Length: 204
Image 1 (cartoon, one colour):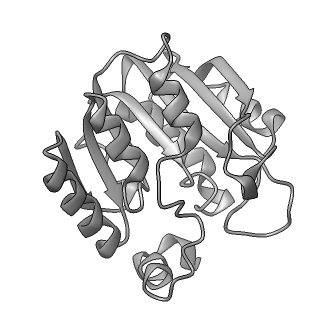
Image 2 (tube, helix red, strand yellow):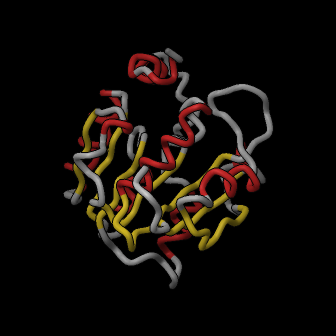
């Protein structure tokens, strides 16, 4: 089994300080999204592979009812402690995201993605998209911040707009997929913000 599919791999990254994907703050594109006049209305949201929960907690601060999921227990503990300190509507648990269905099928208005898609093995991308589709209500929205770099190997594994369209289009309508202008410096010109809506497709 690939190490990226195992909880210990990610927990060890937090413990040895090699968690370079952790910005220590919410991603600026999400801050802008929630501050805009066109910000999505509040609702139930699940953050997949949320890490220490910076993005998930931002959405909770804006009134969303947030559930966060991650492999790493220390990341979960940090997010819970921050949520409690801020009195937020937030729950978090350690779990393999691919085990969320059937328990949470059709539960959420939103699925939030940031550095989970680029962290899983590329062979898991189709199952991931199927999972997201199953988690969302028919009227839901997928909110994703994709790391579209072109470097070999991973994690983080790169992608392109064309690859995202090919992967997601069988199950999602692309409301928007736009380059980000306010990324953190080490991801400048390499991020795409996506809003996708689930299509009615076969459950197979």
